[in-house]
Length: 67
Image (cartoon, rainbow, N blue to C red; front, side):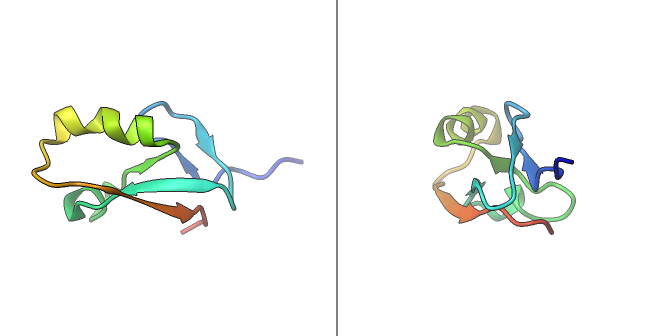
């Protein structure tokens, strides 16, 4: 039996396993309320920037855990 992933990448929809590397945007609007963007790689994070229109953003790597 396989366990369900902790997250799904917000861009490519690839599952991110519990204990795997997850990337979050540093901008609070990407991580607040119902919208909590999580990415599987720096490339996926970078591809959300043109539509997000952030002035100054970076990403934070963390270990994926279920919320």
